[in-house]
Length: 279
Ligand SMILES: [Zn+2]
Image 1 (cartoon, rainbow, N blue to C red):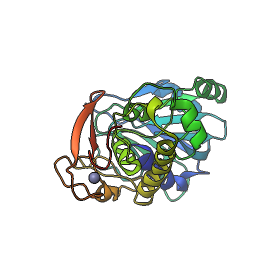
Image 2 (image 1 turned 180 degrees about the vertical axis):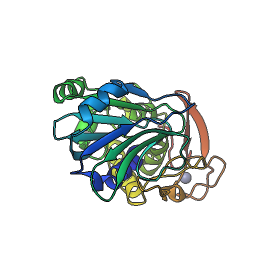
Image 3 (image 1 turned 120 degrees about the horizontal axis):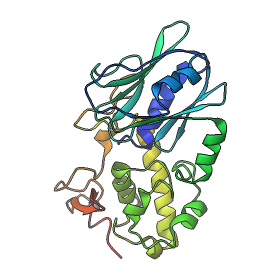
């Protein structure tokens, strides 16, 4: 968390800043764990102030701000970060404020409750090199069925674990992996190399369906309240979750079995044993 739908919602909310020039970068004093920032603040200021933001894009679970100097500022919110326009949930966890020139006065705010996020600045060349290393695979909304199979079908990993691998497919995290596998009617422990053609088709379709539904509802704000859109609103997809954090409740799909929780790779997985039998 935040995953693809939440970061995509932030990206959409940040579109009003496209075309604006960076006027000032401020790093408020904070007694909390500082974000990883590469390069440091002084270099960030020297290179970015005066540049115009020409695009706010998304790469998996990261936001990418491209400037007219072809620099890329890549913000990875990781566990508890948000990037918003103007109004943060509180001042204590504001880690960076990027003030923009012109009217209305706007600042891009990097807020992070746990300080686990990262902010990195790349030149065009560095960005291309980083992309070519393949640490971020094709986007989960854009990957084709053939690409998905080609990347995962010889893997012996359990499908839930493989879906979290950002090198294979980018954007899916722990929450949406459980939801997607439920819609696809696939057991989370099933090995990738044992999925048949029909299961691959269902998995691919479920990925797009769940992620698009979640984007339409502006993502999921969980009980901890951390995730907010760029306009500091809550998402609404949490009310549509089918299995995530619903252990013990009756499955909304079959209305017979109860949702179970198990642990895979130290993360909780939720599934319905009736709708998602292990083959
Ligand atoms: Zn069920």
